[in-house]
Amino acid sequence: MTAAVLSIGTELTRGELTNTNASWLSEELTALGCTVVEQVAVGDDIETIGAALKRLSAAHTLIVATGGLGPTTDDLTAEAVARVAGVPRSRHEPSLRMIERRFAAVGRVMSPSNAKQADLPDGADALENPVGTAPGFAMTLGACRAWFLPGVPHEMKRLFADHVQPAVSRSVERTTHQVHLRTFGLAESKVGELLEGVEAAYEGLTLGYRASFPEIEVKLLARAETEARAEEIARAAESEVRTRLGDAVFGTGEERYPVYVGHVLRERGMTIALAESCTGGMVGSLITDVPGSSEYMLLSAVTYANAAKTKVLGVGAEILRGHGAVSSECAAAMADGARRLADSDLAVAITGIAGPGGGTEDKPVGTVFIAVARREGETVTQAHALGGDRWRIRRLSAYLALRELVRAAKGA
Image (tube, rainbow, N blue to C red; front, side, top):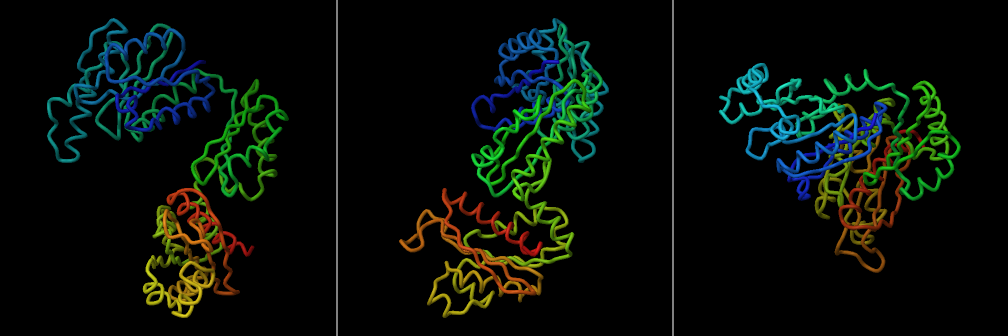
């Protein structure tokens, strides 16, 4: 089954929004066994939308379209579909009542313009939207089944899961299997170098890479005569990939590195404290973005100024005078102070120069010191020379601090 993803919205064609819906849908459809041939984005123009639908429906057996289902004058998807199908639009009363209930649930009166969202092409199958006001719909255009979903990402994903995924699963014989591995600590070029030859070693295997700095996702897609055989190929290749990349692989699927850090700490029943300077609370934000982090996170201190390092963490004036705030000695004192203050099992501290100014010949921009203090054992400090702009230096520093927490928790 060949498929196309159609994204409708002038905000996409102007570059005002990043089209995350298209990439997500392509991955999901591929996982279901579809061959996604095209991703197309068009603006809010009824003629352009119609032309895209005519071409795509003639070329493919499946279209998943997003956007243009709202109540405003530039929401033209339903009208464009009706024109292409050569049918009128009619008010779909069950959808209208659903929209009215959504407004009533939040104590609001539905404005007349919102009723437009229930005007669907005759012959369309309405798709209830349990998380928004715009219903989706499905329509057969010639030999193509087309699905029209809201452009709001969480609404789109819900309708896809409720309606599109089950229908496609019933109509496509699945002969693929995907595995997504998440890595940290290796550059994308290095990951590709280490995995050279893996594709050739496994028939039907395709490797893909996606960078979300500083994480790298490795995607394994296996195609075979049956789903069982595809899974067998994917699992064998996964084992080899894990062997080649070693401990750079930390998780699968959508799991991000801070989630993995939480798993490690929970498994060992360990608590942590943080002391940040150049990262300004970024480590604390990454950790507390994870639900349940209160089980292991005790304290986060952002001590940007030297006086705060002394007053809050007890960093000695002699350290600041003799070595400076950006030094291994200061990082160690910050970590010791945070661990002592929180009475935690571990503490990590970061101090550095994120730029763009502030660097010297001895300590250029990108100089970062990370220290880990333990309840049992000595405090260990690492020096890093990082490249990139201020955001990249700070973000990579935060991730390196998380990695040091993992290593300390594991006793490495």
